[in-house]
Length: 311
Image 1 (cartoon, one colour):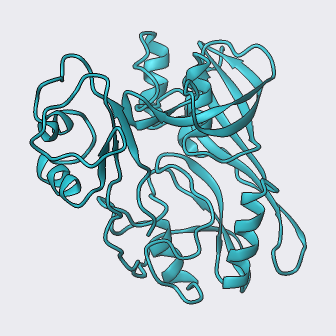
Image 2: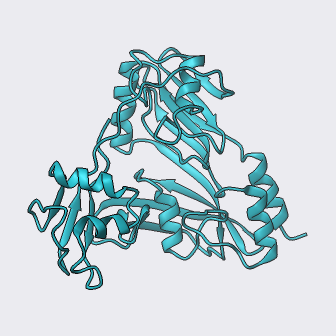
C-alpha cells in the first residue's frame, strides 16, 4: 500500500514554547501523541528540514512536515454481498454502486466493500492486497456507475486511460442555490490547510482539477446540475461546488445544515450528499470496443427531487 500524503503545518505564536509532540497531538491530525512520538523517533517528522527531538519546544513560524507510516497491508476476502451488475466479461465488470458502500477495505472498513463483493461474485486475476481490480473510486455516499478490472491487462489499460483522462465521466448533483449557467472550474486541488479530512481549491500548491458544471433543472432553493470530469481528484466535484458557494445538498463534510425547512427535509430524505455517477464511457482495454453506460438516479435522489419540485 502507498503511504498517506505528507502533512505540512505551520507553528503558530500561541503554540510556541510547548513541547513539539504535545503541539502536534493537539492538532486534529488523526494521530495519537504516542504515534507522533514514534514518527519523530524514526525520523518521519521534520522541522524546517531537520529532524527534531520530541521534547524540544516548538518555534513560532516553523514549518513541520510529517510523513505518516503506510497502513499495514491487508488482503481483501470474498463476501456474498448484493451487487447491481451493469456489464461483465472476462476482463472487467461494470457495476452500479449503492450509496453507503465503501469501494475497498481500509482502516475502519475492513469488510462489506465493493472489492469484497466483486471477489465473491467474479474474482480478480492475481488478487492480493486491499484493492484488487480498483482503477478509480467513488466516495462511500456517492452512488453510481464504476468499472473494476478482472485481469491484469485490463487493469493496466484502464489505469492508463484514467491517468490520461480518456474517460467520459458525468455526475448529477443537487446543489444549493441557483446555479444559473454553465461554468468550467479549472483550479489547483490540495489538502485543506485547516482540516485534513477535506480538500480545497484555495491552495497555493496542488494538482490541477477541471470540472464542467451545467445546470439541468431549477428547483426549490436548489439546482440539479451535471458535472463532467476532465480530471479525477479526491472529492473534486464536492470541492469545486463548495468553493463556488453551491455545496451539494446533504454533504456533511463540505456543506451545511439548511435553514430552509423544505431543503432540510430533502436532505433528510437523502441522508447523504446528492451526488450520483450517472455516465461512464471508455474504450475496452482489450477489445477496443467503445463502451457507454448510464445509471438512473437512485430512489432517494428521485424522492428528494420530487420534494423540491414546484407543484
